Length: 450
Image (cartoon, rainbow, N blue to C red; front, side):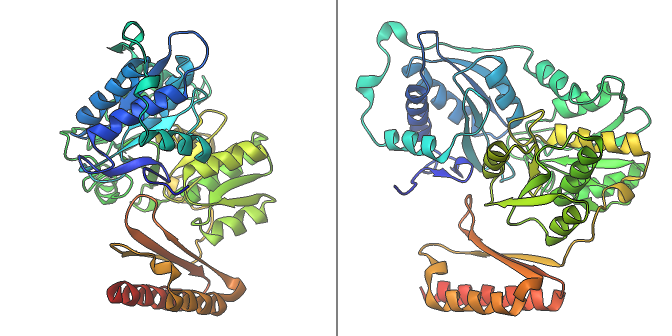
């Protein structure tokens, strides 16, 4: 069955346009509500959101759908995605929902769903919900005396802050560290600075004034330039940039250099391996992670497991193979000893723990390997399937032959935007650039001809 609603990370699109309309959101509430009813208790859902203007519309529509399905709704307000996952378990909810389009601009929004165990839904469950969205399910909805109720709950931020702080040893303090935190005008604009300050750090906060429109706007993990500038300006020890829903982060060292998720995976993987905490003898990443990470881990006796793009697939592989460190180059870091999904704040705290233990500058500590030259380019398309065109297939095959065993080629359609991502890496940067430009050129020609 082909997907009409769900992509690689829930349902996502431009606000007030299909599929991110109030009507679809209400149907999602009904369908998901009916799908997750179990036992004879009062069924409940925890519902969080980031700071987008459209969150009000989507939130109210979801509430209507869930209440119609007979589920009580606990409204969390603006909270990080990992807080929703954590509270789904903590509050014994039947389902958790986060309204967010992650790192996308304000005019997009999305719906992410979590099961009662705090994990994102499997493809199978998503397809089951999707099948209900275009059906007439009125007959299965709750009777008038069994409708759900909705209420806002207090203390959500305090719960999450304490949860994040407990991921560090009780004896560890961040005193002596000057930290700049970029909240991306998003969901963590209150909790992230508060947690760092309570742990003893000197905290300088930027982009913590959301207005419904400025989430991720020239800030956050996808735009760390202003963070790097601030780190240099205030002579901070480290900068931390979250994205709009705070499930990913990137680091900026004291020199203003950006540290991506691959280097963070290398640092945490090595640190946990040395302390005996690392499970499964390896780290999980996606096909987009740098070949340098794979070589680094191999040199210290660890294996890099690769999955398709999407932190959900990283988590599924971690669970299936007993590994507890995984993530993506983009900054989704999953530490399953603590969380069921990517958590930008918790990941940053683990980096800070390494800084405190080893007492080394971030520029030294977070440069675990030299990245293999890697180039990623995006080609936007408006329809059709360019990757199935014969000229594109021929160009890809030729590129693989040119790279040989000293490089990698990854070509995939984006799961959240109408883009084809073309990535190549290898020891020869000129060859990498030539290969990517060749494929991008052929895709562009096919797209134009179509």
